[in-house]
Length: 339
Image 1 (cartoon, rainbow, N blue to C red):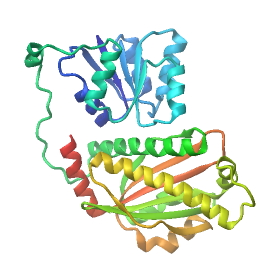
Image 2: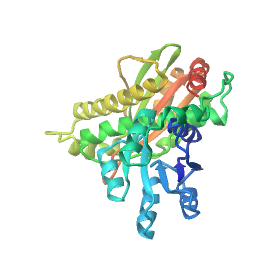
Image 3: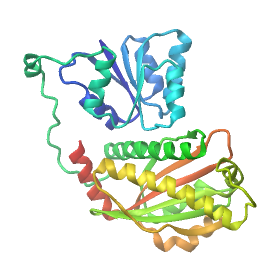
């Protein structure tokens, strides 16, 4: 059997490959985006496809739509950090065989493959003959390499999906998810990135600090003020949409997105975070005003940026996770241990 892992994250592809049964004798292929995945499928490399949803070039939905349009009967198991109920419904309607959330545990994969008749438990003799797929020791890396950026992006992707799922259930809507943007930024570069996030809109912003086992930083939610009307309707707000009502909607959204993202991120690093009280940095202000007022808070940092949008509604916000420079070495060491 030819098995294709289609995911834009090299870390996620390796993680999934290592989670597959060691005695499952298949030809394993990989694709880094949907277009490459379709090419591999047309070459006969995808009898079974493990498919991510959030990818550049062509996303997972596009791959499923292509298979359906071309009448191809490849078996597809979606493996995604986007665990919203509507995401599940959409992929199943497009012909997916099943859906599991990232990161996929070995026992979950084995149960799923067994359920669909794709793999059976091996005999003790077969297990003894199976090759050793355990990872070789890796030297701790302190520098921020492209490989590490890929891992951080995948960690953020999983946490982003968990936060979106919670928001989608709260609003009874579908949250459109981007590919997380991960960079180490100097303070001037951070200001440029913040300015680009909302150059033509006024914002309301909430900041919440977090710390745990040598990792510290701040989560910053930039909420576009033009979103308040639609957000109020989605949250069934009654009464006048005044300053206090907008503040309540802002804090509710911040609590959902920041809290769920930090939990999802911390769980993957096996490091619980203690969270400080959320602080309102400003309401109905330009991004330049927010930066000018709070520039002393931010120095050189590892920044993870995610733009959340609600499908069919004018609701948009940017979530930034700003880790201190000292935190990078600690997280790198944890990541090398995970690998």
